[in-house]
Structure formats: C-alpha cells, structure tokens
Image (tube, rainbow, N blue to C red; front, side, top):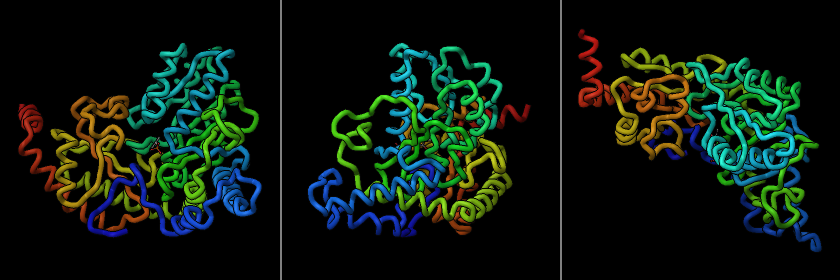
Length: 397
Ligand SMILES: *Cc1c(COP(=O)(O)O)cnc(C)c1O
C-alpha cells in the first residue's frame, strides 16, 4: 500500500490484496465467457472458477459447497436472509428477534418488515455492547421465526456469544441468522459447531474486492428467492455471475483464514498498545466496548469528554490519519451512534466517539504516530470546546 497516510479504518473497508487481484484479472479479459453459456468450451473455465470459489468460502466456515450463495455484498446478504426467511415462514409466525446494535443493513430491514405485518424485538446490550442470553430466552415467543444477532459489532468490536445463541435457537426450532461481516476472516467461525442457519459476509472486509459477498443458507431451509430471472445461484439469485469478484472473495477468504491466528495475535498486540497509550496520554477518555478476547483483534473505540467526533476526524485527516466516528455508513449524518446509545452512553459521549480499526497494513509506527498526534489534537480541540468548559467547571464545584 502506498503510504502517504496512516489508514486506521479497516472496519470500513480493506484494500484488495495483490495476490487476490492477480487471480481475478484473467476473468475480466481472456476468461470472460458467460458461465451459463454451456454450448462452447471456453465457458467451462469461469464455471469451474466459481465452483472453486464456492468451495473455498464453504471450507472457511465449515459449510457445504451448495450452502453458499454469492451476492453483491454484506447489505444484500443481510436483506436476503431476513426478508427471505420472514416471507417464506409467515405461516408459522411473524415475530423476529434482533439487537439494538445491529448494522443498519439489518435494522432498516427489520423496520421495513415492521411496516409489513411483522413484529420485531430489539434486544438490549450491556455497557460493553454484549447481548445477554437470558434476555434472548425471555424474548422468544410461539410466533418467533427468526433470531438475527451480529457476530461482531462494527463500531465497538464486541463479539457476541454466538455458539450459545445458536444452541438456544436450534433447541427452540427457531432459525438463526448472523451478520458476520466483521468477523469472517478475523475470528474463527464454524457454522456447524455454532448452529448457525444463515450467515452474511462481504469480501471487502477481508482484503477481497468490493461489491461481492456471500450468504450461507443451511441445507433444507426454506427461503424466498432474492432475484427472479435466470437459473444462477440455483435459481435463488438470478443475474450473470460477477466472476472476477467471486474468484476474488474465494481467494481472499482462503488467505485470511490461513493467516487468521497469526494476524489476530499481531493485531491484538498493536491494539493493546494503542488502547493503553491513548488511555494513559489523554485524560477523561472512555474506552468503548469489551476488553480481551471478547473484542475484535483490530478494533479500538474511544469517547473523549467534551469533544465532537466530527471535528476530531477533520483534524486527524489534516495529519494524514484516516479514522471514523460511528460507522462509515452513518458518518456524514449528525446522529449519535445508536450502538453507543444502546450501551448506555449519554448523548454527549455517544456523539464524540472515535473508532480506530487496525488491519494488515498497520504497523507499530502507525500506532506511535497516532499516539503522538492524537493527544495534541484532543487538547487543542478541548480548549476550544464549550462542552469541555462546562465539564471543567462542574469538576471545580
Ligand atoms: C460493512 C458491514 C455491512 C455492509 O456490508 P456492505 O458490503 O458494505 O454492504 C454489514 N454489516 C456489518 C457488520 C458491516 O460491518
């Protein structure tokens, strides 16, 4: 990666690794044939490539090849999973359980379903952004058809008790979907062991290309088709396959899983250095999210009392640092983070958060640079902030 800047926003997206791009390239040019054109032999290679990619994605999460369906990204997989299950099972019930801290791809899909005759329970989370199993058990009704709980949160990095949730859902015969967009390629996933029925992923969150994702649908599950048309993806999602993208997500997931343990150790150590450095150097700072293994290896999230997230990001950008407040999709809006509000943070703190997410290109030097620059910026902005002035005055009393 060309390093004229420090990129600390890997949760928003990653670059495509060169070895991934290299496998993709021939499928734009020489190997361009439509995989559905079965009457000439040059369509064979793209067909075989899709099959290979499907196998690689399946293996990475311990699924079967014919349980993997390619999509155009994480949001599409989430939409398909939730609407597809809701509409295919409405004779059984109309109740869905999710959480208050889901990505908008899940939350807004649930809002849509609420307008269409479904009832949705939004589970609360604790101060660390973790779901309580007892709350889930208490929320289940006779009419519950689907539970959708994200594997890991994109803002605060909290990793949910997915295996316990899966066990409860399987026992109660309720389908279980997880938005694993932040987790795939970063933490170990086994859909069989964890009793997951549907799982969403996106290639660009683990060094694959943008615009390609996958949905795992356990064999035998009834789900509405997503795109009506030709017979692609076994008739469930028509449209000529994004062959280069599919090849890319296959290579990227294989690579990510092969490096997973080693990279997690490296990132956790960088993250701890970053977190302890920020907490030591900047007074009146809150670490948002859990600690240790319950947190995604590359995630850090802070609130600085008396500060606005937006002004912080502008100052960081001026120093060549890419970071985010809330999620990429929510930035640009001035709403405080729904995740931090659900964790019980007061409005001022939910507004002034900073997410720093580390990844493959992150180095010790990046962290050192951040630890040098950030305290100065926070001090300067606080000195100009009426919120900070109020806070200091209150402290004097
Ligand atoms: C990025 C993200 C999505 C959306 O993925 P796209 O590929 O951008 O549609 C969904 N859920 C989570 C948790 C994410 O981090």
